[in-house]
Structure formats: structure tokens, C-alpha cells
Image 1 (cartoon, rainbow, N blue to C red):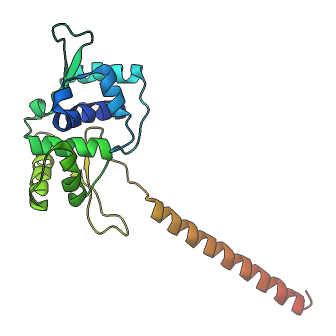
Image 2: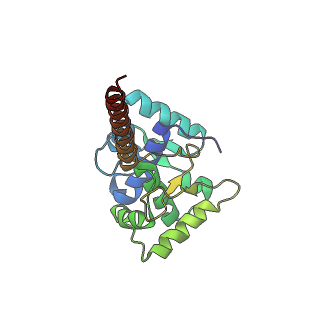
Length: 206
């Protein structure tokens, strides 16, 4: 599998999202894709892709057979469709899960289930979400999703897509705060010890 850039992931995820969330406005023009990719809600992280970046991402996705361009009769601008589902033979639930992971980063079963409703799909249970994820994890010859190691303080595992490669371990904000607090405590302890040593030295006439 040819790995995708972050821009390609965002553009492809946007195409899938709009296909299910607003089918009346799908397929999409390049400008509509850029606006969707850069919207502030339902995105993590929020991006500011330029026209050039979106165009380059679309060109690359076409070469990778993950999207296609169409010209409707009388239309001024070409439109684009996603082909991720066709390329990997995915059913709608798995395709929607992929879009959520591509647009919002690693998520738990509960988060995926709740957010899928924004794409007009309702998972009846967490088991249904897990079944869709297992389809993507067990996909041959190359899985599209992986289970992330549970981080300190997390109660549930999270899932991430593999279209851009294996996700790097993420140090969460809470963990940073904890490390900083421990460092500050150690520094304070060292200062106290130095003061105690200095007082002892003076008491001994040093």
C-alpha cells in the first residue's frame, strides 16, 4: 500500500464524509473539498490546506486509484468521488469508520459509534463498531486499522488508521503535566538538600 500524506488523508476523509453526510452535494468540486477539509468542527487537527495542496492531494489520490474526477454536462468545474471503498471492497460501515479515523484521529469504540451519526449511520451497538473495525484490522494483504496501546490514565483502547503509516506514540497533555510536576518536585527537593548541606557546613564552622 502506498502511504498517504496528511493532506491526502484529510482530502480523502472529507470526500467520504460528505458522500454520507450530504449526498446531495456529492461528488464535490475542488473548492468544496478544500472548505470541507479545513472546516473547524469534526476535525482533529484543524488544517489550513491551500488550493495548491488540495489540488496536489487530489492528483496523487487519483494516481493511487483512491479518487476519480468527473465532468458533469454543463458544469463549470470538475467534481471528485472517493474510491477507497471500491479499492478495498469495503461496506458502508467500515468506510464510515475509516473516514472518522482519518478526520478526527484515534478514537474509542464509543466515540466512533457516537460520531458515525453525523454521517447518517447508526451503529446499533459497540459490538457492531468493533466488527467493522475488525474487518479493517484483518484486511488482506494490508490492514487499514490498528489498535493503539492503552496510555496511562486511559480506560479504553483507541483505534487508528494506517493509511499514513503506523501512528507515532502520542504523549497526552495530562502526561506532560504529570512529568513536569514530578520534575518540579525533584528540583525543589534538590534545593532543600543544598540548603540543608549549607546550613550544616556553617554549623560545623566550614
